[in-house]
Image 1 (cartoon, one colour):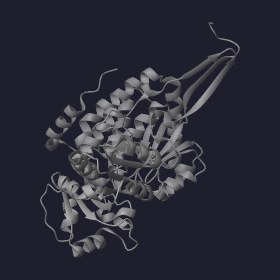
Image 2 (image 1 turned 180 degrees about the vertical axis):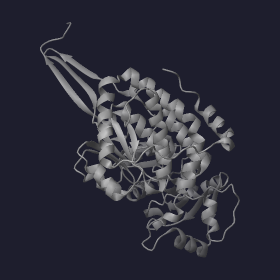
Image 3 (image 1 turned 30 degrees about the vertical axis):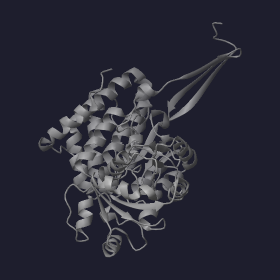
Image 4 (image 1 turned 45 degrees about the vertical axis):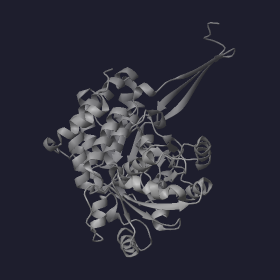
Length: 463
């Protein structure tokens, strides 16, 4: 298997070629109904599982990675243009990471146990046809990640794109399907519904040939998957708190909080959503954050105007501002700030909607607390028991250990931006589907397989 090129080198190549990127086609050939999609996907999956072993799958996945690399810029541009969310540079980084570091078939390992009574063999087997619901916040990265993971496990996948991201989702699936076709894989192994609607989504989830549903999105989408009667992988909402205690390295914390909360304009579900700071270091932390692109709103009238602008009447996030630049949001309340501003911070109380709701925009509430124990207690309340993600900046081992135990999140990061839990600037594999609602956690090919056990009694021992 060929080695993946250096990640930083790829990002630099992508950024240097940005002005030459082209969109390419965004339409899949032909238009079929859900029944035809399911039939084609089931036939393709049977052939793929039967005739394409792990070694062959490894080679084909490497071809998919190679064929996706030249499209990183164009897919990033199309995602920004179609959804109106996020920023180009971070989307390029996110797509590069997903291509390079999503685990493939090599991660699927059998497990064997031998004893006096014989041999037990456990292996990961495919479910079959998977229906994968794609969000508008991270459409390209989710299609790439899920395609690699799902077909690595021997499955086929039918994507149901979000209406706000249908073209870029289709285009991404089309590139992958073209590579599979060129490698001799059966047509229909990776496909996407070209006409997203609740009716088509319902038909897809209920279709008898669909054996597993993977849902990434808001509570409504995840709940639909969980109540479908099918096995489900549910990537639900989060409201990740970041705690900064009195022992933290404030330069590292200031840069890390801004980098994390501002990444792709806070669209990632793991991104820092509220900042809880021990009071004695709060002012100094803010100064460090200002050095890295944060801007604080202090005027009461400006804060109230921001509240009316980015919140609906029920205090939920106004979708018109989800994923928008910090400068854009501030302009809408009459403030012109330097282009270097990436994050808006506002001091609030715990009960403020900015802290209680997942905004998915670069607006970060800062809440002062007297000590670490108060910070941890507040973090647990604001995380709402989603068990999703949390961050701490501290040099106190006892504090880090206590929060890790008590916060009980799937992702927990110490002294770094939350996106490190997804594989950015860290050594862990990439995941874009974090199954908190159904317990699989950071998904990989094994997450989309079922464990099968074979027992051979009293034989096949050499000792």
